Amino acid sequence: MAPLRPEEPGSAAAYLCVFLLTVSAWMALPGPVRCGSVALNRRGWEDRTFDLNGGERGFLPGQKAVGAGSTPRFRRALSWDKQMSLLSSSFVLKGDATHNQAMVHWTGENSSVILILTKYYHADSTKVLESSLWRSSDYGTTYTKLNLMPGTTIVVTSFYICPTNKKKVILVGSSINERDQMLFISTDEGSSFQRQSIDFTPDTLIFHPKEEDKLLAYCKEGRLFASADLGRKWTLLQERVTKDRVFWSVSGVDVDPDLVHMEMQDTSGGAVIFH
Image (cartoon, rainbow, N blue to C red; front, side, top):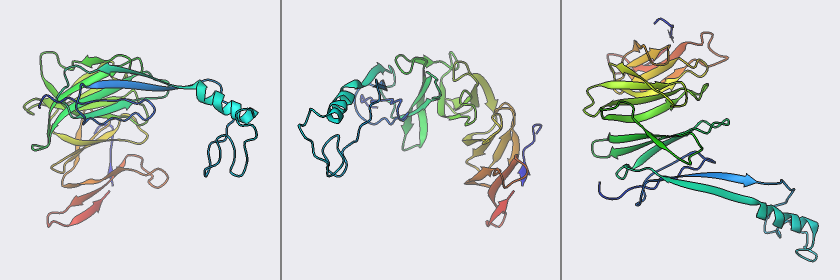
């Protein structure tokens, strides 16, 4: 087991609909890039039986509506329908006409902050060529495009949210020529970011399930790095590691919470389980 120690184009654009009920997005349709927010407004919660197996509205199967529209249950059902309403708004994300992918994050838990990362992913080169990061602090009514490095074009490929503290966000980015690799670290839901240069290209970040400042970074070439201070300092943990075969210690099974389980390739090409 490997313990982690603190020291150690076209003219086509794309529709973007942000639904706060599901907090998910996918961009692929023609039209202006547009962000919408949706909220369910429910006034008064009456008891109501929904249609079951073809039963009449407001009644269980086998029950009959005597004087439909006059029974208390039927009237309550109609009242409940009228009292539910879907409130929505939209906002155009200007300048992202060529972007064809989006990642959306809403913290939830009474937070009004939404982050949207839009990207132009070039399928032939399998690279992200452009990106924009948008932030809303009013549940998606308005958005502001964030400038992470004024005067410098930065391409952000992905972002990661700490599972135990949703205010902590890490963006993975690089200069447009990919010469400089960097992370952008936020501890306030993207209100501000601190840039951290790194000397490797992370393919995936893996947060610790309980320790909010500890994370792993897997690189395509098989190197695995570890950090104990939210990505500010990194230590090479292991090389020749198999992708998607890395995970943190299991609570209730492993004694050391900082253990890292991984599969790696030995020099002869075989797979070895390493802890």
